Length: 282
Image (cartoon, rainbow, N blue to C red):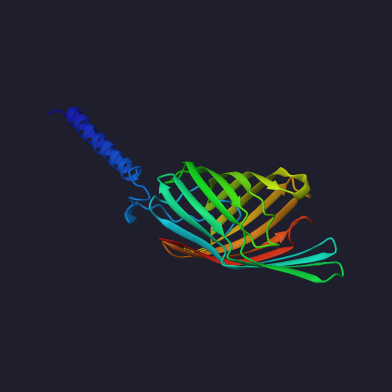
């Protein structure tokens, strides 16, 4: 056999091996056979992704057959505006996520206990406490679930008026959200989100509110990450803008702690908010 023929033969073998590896990798990444009733094996789970602690939602869905809980241990909000003062505490509000298919999940948000105190001018302080509203969510990932420089998703929310008296508006409301993530290089990652909420404003009836966010994150150590975020909303009163800063601490492949602070930039936004929470995948 001549050298040229041997080279051609070895080239064909290498191409065949490469094609086999690509095919095998594609087959390993294809998880369409799994469902909530037929869970994705642990060996095929994608890296844990959460919809907290920043306000920017994630476009990534939970692997089929798995459950993830994301909750605040506690949160606090303080606001002074119009000569009044509002303080709000929340204990253990959570988001329970269920992986249904390879790129589809459903979830439920619930706030077991909220305490709100309000004072207007020199008047007495009024309080309300109890459980909050419940929100149902469906999330669909279009691309990027299992890797790639970008990812896009779609979220559809329906708020159920389950709040205790004085804590909600006793109306159904909804929202449609498009979350997007992208890699920036140098260890930086970015995310952005745009959403339309249909809210009830009392005598004004239902109206749309347009919200937008952008966030940038970077790992500080192997286990610790940080982010900086801006949010805005318009359509319900004055323009509201916040700046958010937070940190995450990855404990293991299925557990993450976080904390953060929110600062109001515009007058319509709450002055400050604090939170600390945890996420766990099962």
